[in-house]
Length: 634
Image (cartoon, rainbow, N blue to C red; front, side):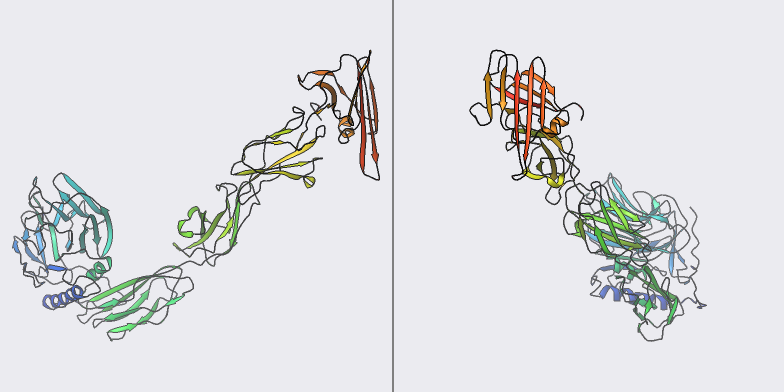
């Protein structure tokens, strides 16, 4: 392996700022003071967390004050990221490393942080930066900070166990990068340049290690680092994301934004950003705000900007400047402004059998919408049913019929969403009942009605009328939970029309088509007012003095009339197709039967008086009945 060149890193210039690198002593003094301030900040939560700090500016001395000094082997001084000739150390990839003992950490800490700045072009495997696992095939384990294939890697490394927590981008690009590996119980997190790039949970019981900590070497793997290393930190606890960012931006003086990243409402169109200067003077740049260059910083330590315009989406606000050492420094904060909130949401209440129709007013600037649905008025439990809806209408055809649901709409713009709209409830109409059938004289005193089950129905309602008109229908049964019903109130001999409507707790189904049905009109000789039977030598006569209801409509519609034996249900005579004359009197004659039907209407009482005389040859049945038979086609 060849040693990497660790020349001065080129820093990005902006607006003509002059770049000049500080000397090593001044840089180290300022940088160490910033790190110690970070570690003593009660808000950061790392009051005693720093166990060792190795600036590697020509020595392996621990500058944390904890005395965890190291011994360097075959390293060379190198130029650091600020251009200081002896501000970092170069490792040859063959024999160079630093033994730093325990670095102040216990043999198996449950939480710790390891961090180092590196510069390399080596893209091979298992390129070790820091580890404490120096023996193979022993009860030993540690989180090895390294690169693998040019990518940052935190390797959970133990006997017969390995989990790689690996970043996606290339860090073997001859540019300085800060790599940080954090263990927090069974959670392992990798940061690159102050930003989290990978994290995993591993429940393996890490055995720890009593070996010495090495910078740039894994003795068990016989691996050495090839490149430059600078500013190595060890903490005996897991740093937070904010602490990591603070450590990464711990520059020797400069621009620091103290305002936290925030998610703000759509109504907030401007924001003021606060920060501090460590002797720096510079400018603020809002990358996607209404105004670009909005503020020039004075020399005072604390500052607050004027109002900065916010667009919907993530507004990245940067500050740039030069510090007292004439080094370019920068910081940034992201203020995300939500999309607008839609209004006027309306969901249809049983208007359609196949969907719930949704409509709302357009949210200002919205590019698309996301639709939520739940069975309770709780948006937190709602599921997304549609995304990237480009219009202000949407049909929910996946919702179950007959159930009340709540809906919300969220606007989307520039990669961010707004708050959910006010909810509205709606439901899908139950479908009409189908396969309805009613008995046609199969029973002497009841009519049986059956139908097919309707999706979403929890009960049914049965209607009846004397004609096939829904406006004349009356409910004769409610809360039926099965798919059949027996109408015991039907008057025998009268044809009724039946409907069935499905129902749920919130919806009533659409009307279905009607179906006719009737109970058989049987002779009851105990009822002398209605029935008379005469037995003669040639012909027997059955007289029905008063049929219950006008039958002329049926007879005019080519229904058939017959006499049956009620008990055996055998036809004794007929059936005969009868057609009345003007709905009043009809006489039918044949060699076997004579039928006379008379119907008179009382205009004053608005009643019908009917009479049926049926003379036929043969023996009179002991239980005669009048059988009305529906024709095959009407």
